Image 1 (cartoon, rainbow, N blue to C red):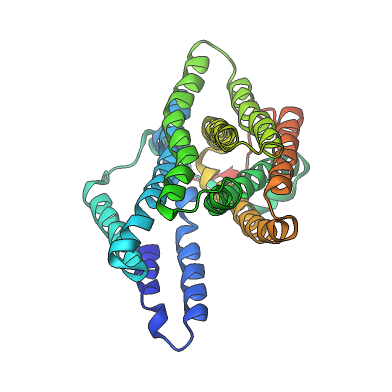
Image 2: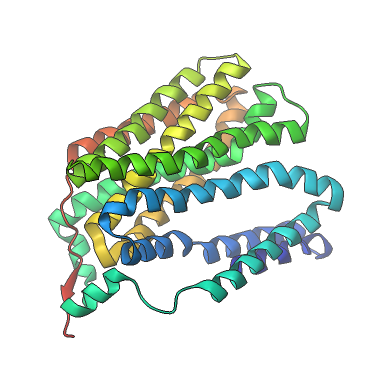
Amino acid sequence: MAWSLFTVLTAGAPATPWPLAVVTALRALMGVASAAALPCTSAALAEWVPAADRGKATALVYGCFNVGTVLVSLGAPALAAVVGCANTFVFFGGVGFLAAAVFEAVKPAHRGPAHRAKAAGGATNLRFGRLFERDVVAQILCLTWAHVVIGFGFFTLQSWIPLYVSNDLGVTDLRTAGLIAAGPWLATAVAAVGVGSIADRLLAKGLPTPRVRQIMMSCATFSPAACLTLVSFLESGLGALALLIFAMVFQAFSYPGFHAYILDVCGDNSGFVLALTNSFGIVAGIVGNIGTGFLVAMTGNFSVVFRLLAVMYLSSGVMWNLFVKGQKLELGEAGAQ
C-alpha cells in the first residue's frame, strides 16, 4: 500500500518548487516500499506450497509481474494521452490501493502446511554467522550472481526496450512502440505457466529436484545469451523483435529454476535469502540502466548492451551448472517449542 501512496504523490511533483528532486525522492521511496515484494512472495510460497508443486506456483506468481509490465506498456501511453501524465500516476496508484484492499479482505486467516510442520518440529531461528561459513558462502555467492544477472537483464530490458523499438527499429509512434515493447513481456507471462508445469512434471517422473532446477536455469541463461548475441548483429526489425521475445520467454525458466531452488534449499529462511540476493539484483538493475544510457549514447545503438547481457547470462549458466548442486542452506538453529 505504501508504494501506491508514493506513486499517487508523484502526480503532485510538478507543483512543487523542486519537481525533479521530489520525483526522484518519491520514486526512491516507492522502491524502498516495494523491496519487500519478492522476499514476502518467496516466504509465502515456501510456507504454503509443497515442493512438488513449486515450479508451477512460482512461475504463475512471478509471471504475473510481467503481466503488470504488459498492462503498463499498453495502457500508460494511451491513458496519458487522455488524462495527462500526472493523472496516470494517480490511476495506477489507485489500482494499487484497490489491490491491497482486496488482498486484506480475502487473505487466509490461518497459516500454511509448512508453518504447521515447522511448529510441530520446533522453530528455526536465523543465525547470521552461518552466512560466513565456507559451505554457505559459496552457494550464496552463486545465487547472488544469478540474481544479479536476472536483475540486470530484467530492469535493463524493461526500461530500454521502448527506446530500442523507437531508435533501432524505427517505430516513432509512442502507442505503437508501447504495443511492440509489451510483446516480449506478454510472451514471458504466457510461457511462465507452461514452464512451471514442465518442471513439476519432471519432478513427478522422478527426476531429482536439483537436476530439474539445473535444467530450468540452463534454459534461462544459455538461451537468452544466444538470442541476445544474435540480436546484436541483426538490423531486421522483425527478426530482432522475434529474438528479443525468445530471450524473454526463456527467462521465464528462472521462475521454476532460481526462485523455486531457493524455496527448496532455504525453507523458512527463503524470504531472507531472496531479500539478500534481490538487493544485489536491484543494484545491478540500477547500474544496468545507467550503464545502458552511457553505452547507447557512445555507440548510437544497443548492440554492445545486448552483447554484454549475453556474456552475463552465459557466465550465470556456467556458474550454476558448476557450483549449484542442491545442498541445503542451513542458516538457523532449532529453537525450543
